[in-house]
Image (cartoon, rainbow, N blue to C red; front, top):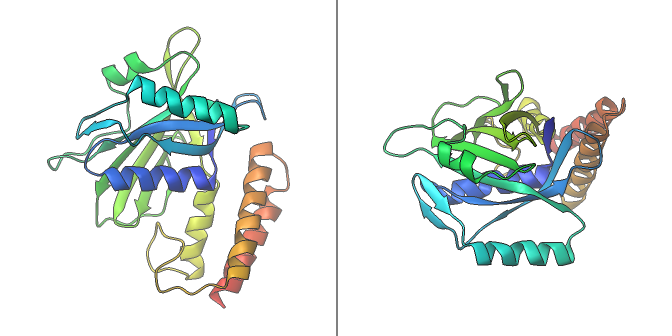
Length: 235
């Protein structure tokens, strides 16, 4: 089992938990789990704005959460996959992206739970994978994150799933090519990029993600197109 995060989902997820730092933030996860057997493809995340937030917990209002689910089911072609929440730094203490006993008790059968630990850090490392590819770790702007994904099996067991985000390679390529001076950023505020090049980059990122998700032999070629577009931006 593997969870693949598309670019929009990854950026939305990190932005949501950074906005709520230092309280826990939570929301719902939508996407597809029928494209390829054994894969959850996360396309969108929806933060729950009316959730009650504290440094060590977040509580969803059942009726309000139900409204989100209802509207989504009416309007979107994507499936509900599960939820996400953060484990923020608090009182100088950092927390791992491992479900607490409460988290485990609230996980339903067959549903996904993404957990993101976040803390302020001067340590700058490229985004990558740790624990044999089961977690994402690295710098995002002024923060450091670790992200994991969990699943309650039909037998009721809690299992950690491999998590993969093709967009990470694009972000790191921005640093390699010199668009930005720090890891964990693709653009900086004073970077001026033409609209045409940004549109081209978006199209090529989407193509690269799709090739990875379909597990074809063309994803390396698709990433070469992304790399060339970034080179054009640098020029």
